Image (cartoon, rainbow over all chains, first blue to last red):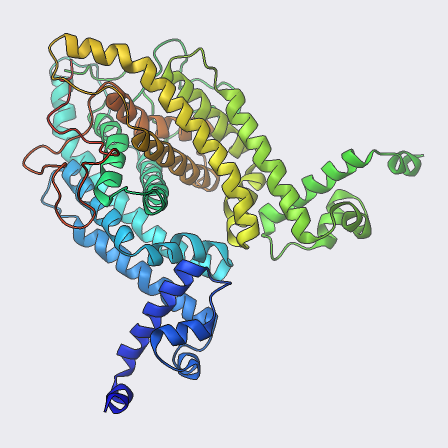
Length: 256
Length: 256
């Protein structure tokens, strides 16, 4: 009876069981060390059936990457509620991200460790997902900057030094990259440091990032305490006069 | 005469020429596509000599990783001057980092892209360098927190809500991970976005990070604007009561 039931299981259900087993095996043992034998055994199916459904170890791994990437992006998007103020949105999005990576450590290991370590085809799959996340974060930062605009203008009207409340697009792209890079590094760390919860990781990143982003959107960028002009060329990499110039020394609005 | 001179070139000099050629080839063409033929030709030596000196493509790649990692770590350490205030130190360290990655884009591609994409042995080499950098950044943040201590205490004496100016060690480790992850992501971005200079990348990360870190060290962590308690368990990943607790809602020192 059990065998008959098993044979009648729809293909889609069986595939998900194979993918569950594959993500666990790849995530915990690594892509190279994982064998199709142990994946089939863990999934409770025969090895030929795994090959029949998913073709090869490479194709199985790509299917794992795609499923885990889709789930992660959906979890982050679902966590952000656009009606909230910008910092609450960021907090909600980060908590959703770290909660998902903590609940699915094998999936995160597949995406952020295994997929990037075993060849350009796999790395390209993950790069596509990462680009989606960066785009989403860029939109969040732009929305936050629009929300901050009245406050920044109010600061100028109240006697603050004139400033540009708009964030140049190059600056927003850089901020989104920094935020995503920091979140990736913290997810690796949180999943490997004993006792670090998803909320702690989110709080660490809020502490690190929000006051910085928040000050920036209110027209209060960081500037060096004395002498060193940021907009004057000096040495390699200098010359910030272009559209991407981001530090407006002496143009900050005083903290109230 | 030139041939005689060439033959008398010390082995160390020849090896550096081979490594220069190899870093350029691996960085620009990728580990898989790079051939020992083109590396030898670019170095101006015979292929057997490359094998004689550096044994195999794998060993040559590992030698590249080690040389580029050492150079990057040394550049960052040299950029930071311990006599400076914390934000200037961070600015100096970030500028040194982004200047080095901008000057040596092939070396950075070897370290951050190629080495992590082509197998666990190479990834482990880079992980060792990354651990060095995280340790160094952790020390910087601890030094900055010690420096901020009198200011934080002064805030409490001036009538601020009592707070703990010490950063828990778990929190500092998380902040260092976040900073290094953000810097890595920004270096990739800066080397691929047209017209982004090392100083712009540094300024973006200072804007993103410093006000956040600075507020945190002065005892002003981020906290949600209403209701949501951060220290009460709710859902997966909650329960921040341990040593790593980082957000002290309601214990912030008012902004002066």
